[in-house]
Length: 165
Image (cartoon, rainbow, N blue to C red; front, side, top):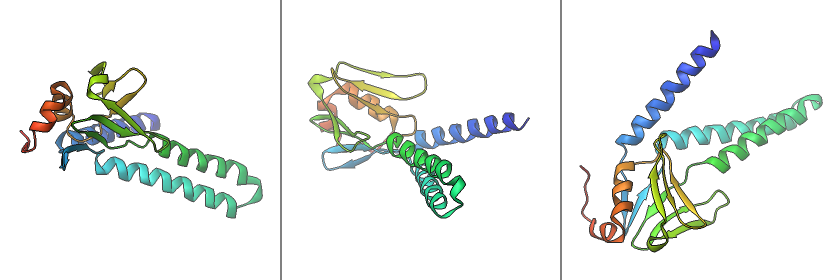
């Protein structure tokens, strides 16, 4: 019965996060639209990373026989949160860009876009030949992002005064 409640609570939290993302608005910074992940998701990932660091510290300071397991689990938490942390997606006159998990930029110029699709989970994927940029269901203003990507660089450049629906 305990597993049922875990599933229900997880579903409720994910639904709440998705609802918060639908209400969040993108920001305009100069000539670029910024689509950041919502604050609640950043707090969740930060908590996960801090928990991992806490486990690593507890493993080093704790009993010797538990050290390997506790440190390993803590490192898994830290690595998982750093690799999967949703990054801000940027749209500009040049194209779409997002930081990759290793810190470099994934850049797709407008003329290189081969497809853009919205998946059943609510994420939006913009693809180029050797690259893809993902806007998760927990990023701000998914509908505006879709309109901007479908409209191309002209819409991004002309929407300086966009204030939302």
